[in-house]
Length: 167
Image (cartoon, rainbow, N blue to C red):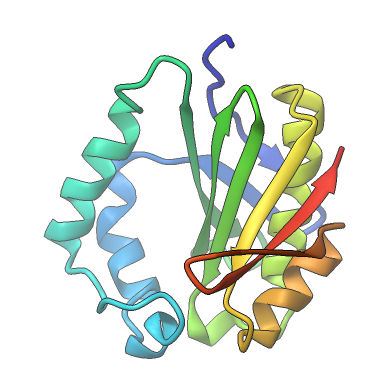
């Protein structure tokens, strides 16, 4: 598999911008609500912790067969960052995830971002299968996955439902 690099993705209201370390400070504020960690565990990261994480993510995977593609989500009309989307791409397909800051939830932003990501993976990265792991009680995330074309499977991984779509 050739390395896949994140590219800018434009949707109706959003710009998915390839991750840069410089976004850490603004994203620390966007992701500061402890409630965002209800299903994934952990706690909000400080801007310094995010900066360190972003340095590692931007450097990419040490495994040449795996590409880490990460974006921040910018709400064009408000001119601010509102969340992230990511894809881990390998020969078997892509595993995706998303998070939108609490103040911007309930506006279809995660669904639009995830749909844009799935479309980009099919076009730009020639991915044939996209999966997401979703906690069975995380109904909002399940709705995002469904909006992006994924369907729940019978498979479970670490207690989460594996959602999948062939693209």
